[in-house]
Image 1 (cartoon, rainbow, N blue to C red):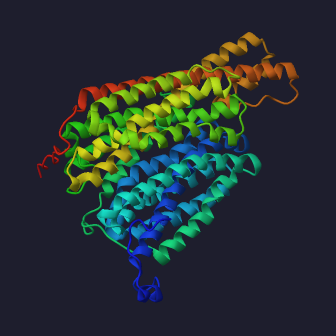
Image 2 (tube, rainbow, N blue to C red):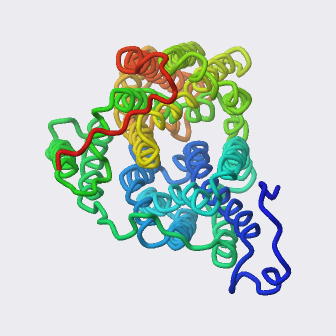
Image 3 (cartoon, rainbow, N blue to C red):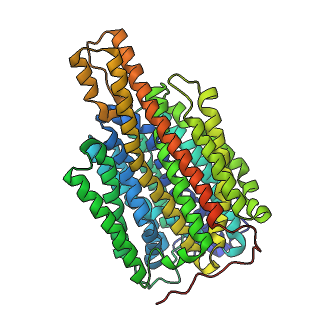
Amino acid sequence: MSHIGSPPCDAGQILRGAHASPCPAVSRRWTLVAAILGSSMAFVDGTVVNVALPALQRELGASASQAQWIIESYSLFLAALLLVGGALGDRLGRRRVFMAGAGLFSAASLACALSGSAGQLIAARAVQGVGAALLVPGSLSLISATFPQSQRGQAIGTWSAFSGITAAVGPVLGGFLIDHFSWHWAFLINVPLGAVLLAICAARVPESRGAAAEGRLDLWGAALATIGLAGIVYAFIEAPAQGWSAPVVMGAALVGVAGLALFVAAEARSPAPMLPLRLLRIRDFAGTNLLTLLLYAALGGGLFYFPLDLIQVQGYGATAAGAAMLPFIAIMFLLSRWAGKLVDTWGPRLPLVAGPLVAALGFALFALPSVGASYGLGFLPAVCTLGLGMAITVAPLTTTVMNSVGPELAGVASGVNNAVSRAAGLLAIAVFGMLMSAAFDAALAQKLSQLQLPAGLHDAIEGQRHRLAAIVVPDGVDQASASAIRQAVGEAFVAGFRRVMLACAALAALSALSAWLLIEGRRDPADVRPAPASPR
């Protein structure tokens, strides 16, 4: 790793070692290594688990709703506690909170690997999400605190490049471990990485605190956000199986709505809110976050089902499914520098309209392949088109978010936008589960009626509808009937997958419309308006 412009250490600093007065250059390099390793653990884990879902369903006997919860329990606590995690680092010490997150994440990863049931795995994933909420915001804050402003941009660029590499390699490595060993190794790999990260932090990363280290923590806001999101997500995930009239589903929905309403009220009154509502009066900030909500709902919700389609319906191995999105990542990586200049050349509105529209086309292309489609002709055009659309969008979106407020609020604005993107995926997976279940159930009922199966066999298949494409054909069924049933199940899943992807295309198009209506066109880059003053 390069020195990133740091001056060399003097002999005294080298001899004194890390426990006395660490060499600034050495501290910066090790801090960058720790930031890359920590963020990579959290980022890769999210993508690897998607690839592992078919194996988890098969070996743990998980239903479709339990598969959703394996993802959602992690995302729920990460989205709800992300901003609090950053504030804790500013107050208690960035290295201390970062290490706490790394330790908790690693311990929870071990618990995930040792889980013997879907319920145990869901609980362990929730703890993982809490650890990630402490770990993720600490990565960039450690870099910002350790590197001087003249070197910070290059350090963040290095962090971003390595994050892109791990995002590409992670799902493939996870798929390889699942194919050749077990899904347990997709979680176990975090344990030695976490141990190395903790050792680096303890020995080489300096401690730092934020300017507002004595400020109040918005614990009520975090609790209400968690309760509100949990209630909404639970209602949408459980409604397909229990129905909206079920008391537990209706109760969860009411608790969720009340929790989110109280969250907004609490943020309006809090002297130090995790979500400063006054920022939403800034037109560009409100517009970019609405765009983020819609577009990342499409991305998170749609790509949840993509590995399931590849593995359970198309017959791909976990390694191949993990590699399926490599063109998407490569396009994002190769076009990132070009996309970063679009706002300077054209202003924010044009790329933030064009990018989501291209992404909408990509989602629509995902709806075309049927059972048995080849990757090159069926899925690659969709993956590349979606990658192009996101490449056009992401850098201008980040730039516009940061430019919409003054530099003193840039960190808050970035944190809010990050939390919005994660909450969007969280909610989309829950809502799209209803859409998928409705389409799958209708298509499966129609196709099974055409097969004219014996009543007992028909009921055995119908009784597994909650497993979606993970339905298992009972033993003793002749080969011809088993093949016909698997084909029917695959076609039913594709029917639901198509409906989900068309919904994703509609969300992406709506995000483009929101950019057109709310985000200003080209303006002087120096025209950055401060946030409106709080009435308090």
